[in-house]
Image 1: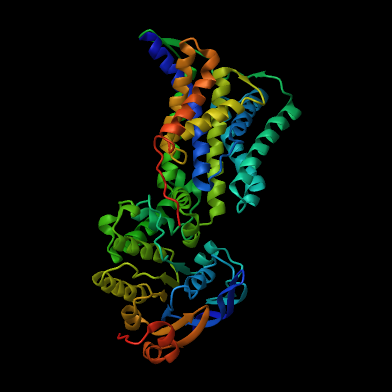
Image 2: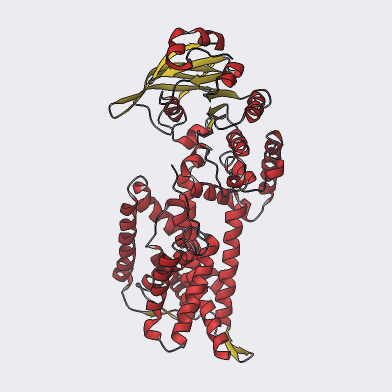
Length: 260
Length: 292
């Protein structure tokens, strides 16, 4: 079942066709990778999918329990409420908030209790607070962040910040998580750990994952389906095996000697 | 030495008023990078509301204070909704000029509706003076400092320990990232204006009680001084604004005490200039890296 469907999506910046006529779909529970050379329009596509920038033309629809809805015209916070979460190519944590507060900030929309109940600590507050606390603790544990929970996120090592960002996106209780170059700047061990973490997102949190990544060993290892974007156009779609044999992809992006 | 402590007490009282006002400036700046020049006028409205309910309904101090905070919070949110929200994506200077316009609107609107004359604020709390170690303290001064400190503690608890406070801090760091984790920035901005304006309303009632006189232009100079206080403390920083407020209040009182009453305002602005030259980010301010 297609969870997310993109039809004929285009984005022009002035005279530049950043993304043109892209059709793609993401099935429930799938792990889809989006690859392509720098400037191919991958992040622009992510930005349109998460409501940050409006497309010039085309459609984005999401299948929900109550039917299929268009994501166009929704503000980013509404898109987040509908179950799309993302991380950024250059990490964008709430740097001077603790790791725990970063996660709590991401739960605001799920647990907006009555402000007065919160101020005066009414029973309604404690009921919700127990839930929020348990969910936060579980996330901290799952993402191996319990020890740094009270540290300012901005002071953590790079690899840990990446984990916090993925944990924060997961804290919004999404259905689809978009990861924009999660392995950028990571050493091989960190990348291996990241691979496990992405596996966990799917098994433990039942998330559908869409991934932009340049680390081809990571992509070829974990992606079920790959879309290849070049100069704003989709040039190929298929399993990692098919993509590695695709002449157009090899020419424009992978080059000659790629081994997964 | 006795004079020193005497002036310190006076300075702390005045300083708590500035601190309450400075908090509103700093919070709004922290969230949407706007210097809300109409903030001093919210404080004026707060004082007039206190004047009105005490004279009209003979309520006590507590009711006047709390109702003024509620009214001012609502007014602050309304102003944000009508005047600043439509300009959310405009250049910052547009919103700044609008803030000055709102300030004039409130000052002249109040003069037009209720007259520009100065009125006596009803002394709803009888003033007692008592002497501790040779230093004269009035119960009103104690009341001002106590209420201000309590409000600052409450503010700190709201900002640090409620979900809305967490959302506020998140939006202050990175509004777009906050939106992408499901935080509605409009709610947060509106809430911030409400919170800041409530503090201004409280400050208005307190100053009415302290100085005993109110008029529609009373918000101008304290508004600017509170802005200076926020800059001195490091604009965007909540503890900074509180500290800056007390520092400016104490400075002003001491300048007056050494016989330079005529220069008390000038002294505050000199401090602003010195701070901007020596420590542009303020006492608690960070030199924030520009986001790319």
